[in-house]
Image 1 (cartoon, helix red, strand yellow):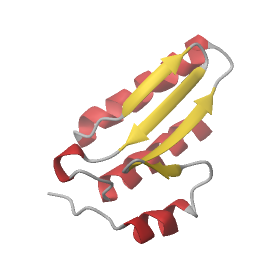
Image 2: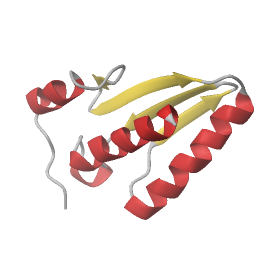
Image 3: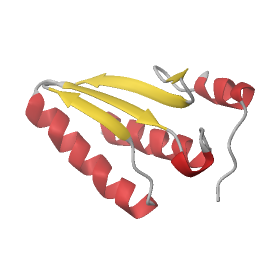
Length: 95
């Protein structure tokens, strides 16, 4: 099981990650794409990695906007798993 990170640890890590914020016990970020097709294609790519990691985001897609919220439900907070997934998401978006 992953260890829940303390607020100060989370904030220090987020300072190195553009656009991610700590809200209500989760890390979150919104992404804007050219259109719905690009947003959905990106979600699909992320979904395959989430399955491999057995770690799934809370997310919402409205047209070209994707809002992603990450936390580790079984520990009730943010863990290393959330940061690994956030970094992977950034890699997918950048490619």
